[in-house]
Structure formats: C-alpha cells, structure tokens
Length: 298
Image (cartoon, rainbow, N blue to C red; front, side, top):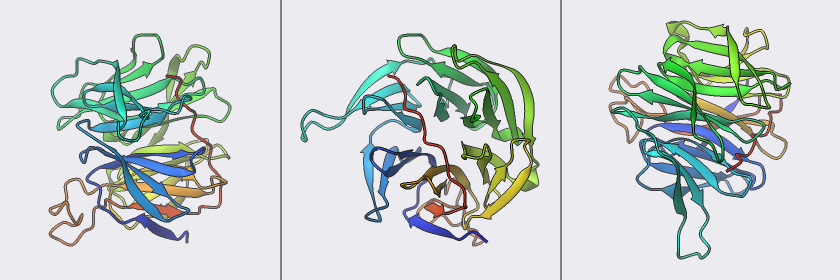
C-alpha cells in the first residue's frame, strides 16, 4: 500500500489547483474560499501564504515571464512581483467577464503553447458552466458550454488529445486537440464513474500516459490508464481530496490537496459524526514520475 503523509496540516476551506514550480522547486495551491495562495517548500518542510487578497482564485498558472495568472470570481488577473520589497505584489486585469450570479472560475490548465483553458461553475445549482480558452492578445473564446461542474483538465503525452472533467456527472471526456490553434472537438467518453465512487475532481498526467484524478467524496486518488480503466487506487485520510500534482526534484512525488467545505466545523474539518472531510495537503510516492506543467504565455 502506498504511504500517504501530511505535508501541510493547516485546514483549507477549499484547497485546490496545486501547481509544482520546477524553477522554484516549490508547491503552490489555492484556498478558494480563504482567498489565499499557499507556497510549500519541501526542502525546509515549511508552508507560507504566498498571496492573499479579495479574489476567490479558482485556479492559477505561472507565466514564462515569472508572473502568475489568477482566474477568479472577478475575472482573470496577472499577478506580478513588485520592483521593491515594500511595494507588494501587483494585480493587472487581463480579462473581464460578465459572470452570472455566483459564477466563478474553478479549475484551469495550460496547454503546450501557453494558452490557458479555464472552466467556470455556478454555486449552488452547478449549471451553465463554460470552458474558456484564454490567449495573449485575443478575446476569450468559449469552447464548451452548458457544463455543470467544470473541473480537472490535462493533455495527452502526444499532444493529440484534451481531457476535461465534469464532476457532477462523474465523467471525464476526451477531445481531439489541435496544438496549432487550440481548438478541441470530436468528444468521446473517457471515464464514467458512479456516485458510490465519489466525483472525479482535479487531475494530472504521468509520464506513462495515465491520468491521476482526485475523487471528491471517496477519500482516494485513482489512476486511469489510456483506455480510461482504473488501474490503481490510493487511499487518502480525508473524504474530500480535490486535486493532484506531481512534484519534487524528479517529479516522483504526488501532492494531493483537500477541502473542509461542508464540514460542521471548518476550523478542524470535522463533521458532527466524526467524519474528517479534509483541508490539509498530502504527499505520496506512487512509483511513477509526472510531467512538468507548461508555463502560460501572458
């Protein structure tokens, strides 16, 4: 059995979107409701708040120029490092959106050309979600509409396919992907789960072409082979694992975020019946390496 350890014991209300920064050798993730982005330095075993503000950041991506794109409930922003230590980080609006009430960006990913694919959700009804393609110098393009809970995304190793999760229906769809244009099409069903399995949430791709997906509500991460079959399951000591990301010097470590959302006590992450929903960040060594995330071109 793969051993899972806790690397950040602080309780995130809705921990999500982990990203391993290869240049900095650190892990970053967002606490959406906490309006914070966290940074974990495994060399020191320490975590700190990297950014906090008024935005609920559903997903973020590092840029080729060293900044960070934040996809939030108030639009898409570029977070730039300040020129002086006392100035603080600066936010620049990249794209404004006319969101419906309670709509916001949720999970995102970056494609090989530096475009961002970012999906929206609307709580509490989870209807009318949209997946946008964001590109420097161009207006956002809606590539999928009428989604319910737009969630984890990734690309195949050969760059020919795009995978997208709609958690409400426990489905992961597979699309043909054109790297030159960013267009997706010809959808097919890659994975269909069941309510008993929980909901597939955030995902990442490993170096063998398999998808790792966090299953919200079932205390586990599952590995899916290129045919969409479950070939491995790793138990997580929290009922609501939310996303996964490979990290470490050789990308051998799998980091897992979780959330205490809906807990009776959001400070501890526990429900009245003693069930621990989550909030910490975990790590394991699954025996396979991951793939580094691409940098956004903004």
